[in-house]
Image (cartoon, rainbow, N blue to C red):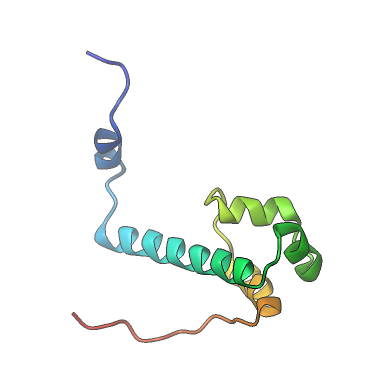
Length: 93
């Protein structure tokens, strides 16, 4: 028997709820949209750093999903790219 766990075994131990999964997915989508906006603006992480005052290493950690950004950080990242955050109703299933 292996002392290592499979991802599926480990994931079951985390005991995420459907709400947890939805929150994680939403965060992933927001970060991916932020990366896409930066690339569409043809800016490097360093250039975005200079525009926002957020250090490049922090931007890299956000973009590689190693750090969850605060709302204020997202707004600072998005503003020079011509974007903002908006609260919208959930789609009804």
